[in-house]
Length: 395
Image 1 (cartoon, rainbow, N blue to C red):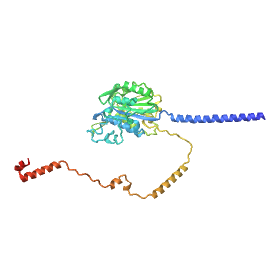
Image 2 (cartoon, rainbow, N blue to C red; image 1 turned 120 degrees about the horizontal axis):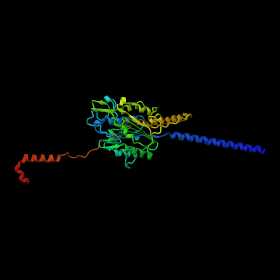
Image 3 (cartoon, one colour; image 1 turned 45 degrees about the vertical axis):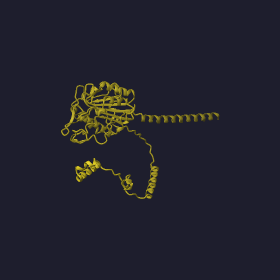
Image 4 (cartoon, helix red, strand yellow; image 1 turned 135 degrees about the vertical axis):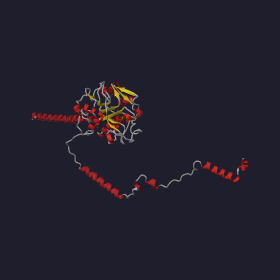
């Protein structure tokens, strides 16, 4: 009897231990799934778009930047996560035949300026110092949020630059320049300060590949429109404006991006092939040795789109009770509306009180020159009546 009791106790203890271990295993599995769901490389995307040129003959560089701005906004990156730097002197330039517009296609088919462009750094704010401060976060405390790159170690950052450059430098508004060493050091500071998870650098300028030769920080992928010793050529001349509308490399990149949607599975390898030498005339280049992932596993939307977290579940939810609650609320609201007296259209407007107000009486003041004119009239009547001989009696 005692042996049977002991065996029963042992079996109960083993069953409890088994249930406890199974429960802890299930909990740990759920925690691992949740951790894996929220740790997917990055949680937010940012874009820094820089046009380093000014003056009318550099119209195409402004159009380049605004076109990229339009594409990243279309794919989901909001203005709050975009830092746009450009001279902004094309839309209202006296030479512009259509003021407040910037076109990127011939025959003026696409206005990339629009009504919703938020320029963060404009005119002479586009400097090397401000650009480096934005990247490294070394900006004054009074700087507004729209001028800050508030990224972290989960941020994927797209940096696009266009302008005039040479071997190892890029000019800023024909007054200063940034070198490839300064740019590489700025990216290293960003990495040390955990300001990015992965970084995509794209530059459209002459000898653009020289700007990423000195990069040494991890998780950077770089693309350029031309190799060292090559020029980056323009595209689409417009006789009505008198200048070229875009650069060749950016034109074909944007043509490629127009086919991308937020759910697209197109990868970076496809982006490398968008502008062969037969189209660009120059030789586009790219660098991936610092990047940890294989480019074929990197989606275009990892940099050009926003992050959308979606959890797929097989469980079903009954919406019947919620629909009943909503129907009852709707019926109650309908009854309340029936009890209210119908209002006239004008009475529903916030300006109804202003419409029915009586005009306020204004204080009367003599118009300008009234007193002087009155004195002139008095003198004329006096002279006409008494003549000049009676002046002695006045004085």
